[in-house]
Length: 99
Image 1 (cartoon, rainbow, N blue to C red):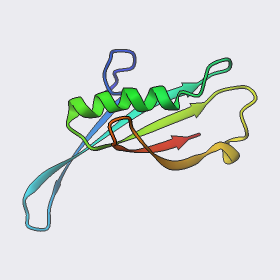
Image 2: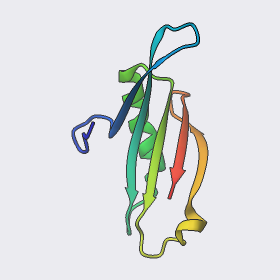
Image 3: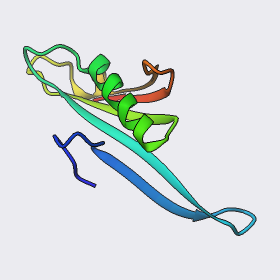
Image 4: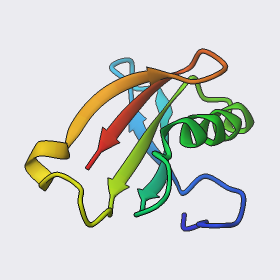
C-alpha cells in the first residue's frame, strides 16, 4: 500500500499463513517512514506520535518507524544505521530503524 501524505500508514503488510494446527491466520505489520533533512529536527518524536495514531486505527500493538538521515553532514551509513526499540506515547513497542 502506497499512501505517503494521505494521512495513512506508509506501509501496511498483510501476510496470510497457516498455523501448526492448520488454521489460517493473518500477520499484519505497520511501517512508517520518515526522512531527516538538513535544517529539520530529528523526526523521531513526531514519527512515534504519528505511528501511534495509525496503530490505534489498525488495532495493532507494535510497529516500525524507519528514519532515513538525508542530512549532508550525517555520519556514514555504517555509522548511523541502528535498530533499537522505543515506546510510543500510548505505550506501544516500536522498532526504530535509523539509517
